[in-house]
Amino acid sequence: MVDVKFCTAFLAFSTFSALFAQTSAMPKTPASLAAEQAAQQPPADAPVDPNKVILTIGSTTITMDQYNKMVDALPQQYQTFARGAGKRQFAENIVQLTLLAADAEKKGLDQDPSVKEQIAVSRKDILAKAMFEDMQKNLKVDDAAIQTYYDAHKNEYESVKAKHILIRVKGAPMPGVEGRPELTDEQALVKANAVRAKLVSGADFATVAKADSDDSGSAAQGGDLGEFRRGMMVPPFEQAAFSLKVGEISQPVKSPFGYHIIVVQEHKLKTLEDSKADIEKAIRPEMARKAVEDMRAKANVKIDDGYFGPAPPPTPAAPGPPAAK
Image (cartoon, rainbow, N blue to C red):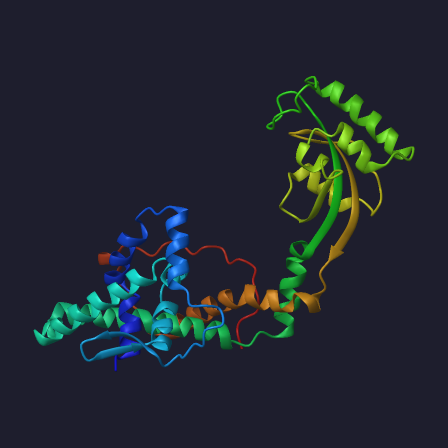
């Protein structure tokens, strides 16, 4: 039976990456990809035995479960390919690597000082990554850290649902509606005020948007833009949308596209309780990095400045969660 831990680690490094990159770069048509995937995927109701041997290389056997663990060790961008259209080629790569590694051991290449050093570096790299992931999973995130992050990033948990009508100005970075005249800034503002007056008088927003908005995409939906968060719209539009009361009709808002008349249908702020899981996910990597910095500070680290050059100036500390406990 193959040593899964060794093989998984081995496959994650440069030899496999080079082989796999060559095949994954080969162009395939959508039809050929669909045919390959259909041929490779078992029926949806087929029983799956994780202990089934799916690959034999001499005296070495690899089960379905072992194969999946090898794929899990790959960089994320390769995993889908290795489970789909590239599954057969991945198996061929495993065969090549296993045969080459076995021959290398027979010839004693694993005892070559240069090779031993590479293996040692690879082992440290794997262990370091595993430790960093373990730290991210197991560092304690207290309520104070979550509250601090939430208060500092509250805007990220705020969203609005809005509609708009755009009156485009000449030269805007978007095509105009065919058949409509190009408007100067002054002309566009006059029209925007007239459109707003109609809405204030009770005209149906969706009807006016379909007739007058120069944003053809949203006009077809009655001006509906759906839900969006901060950072998704141009600054003047965002500032206006997030400051409006629900149901309020905005004054004309100038942006590089022209003048917008905005109505906010819903304004939401995700609560701290509902945001906890997302916040923990966001701050755990930074907590782990700080824990690594603490490890370094406690270790007896000496770097020869004459050989490596002087240390760079310290970067200003960015605001973040409290130190890990």
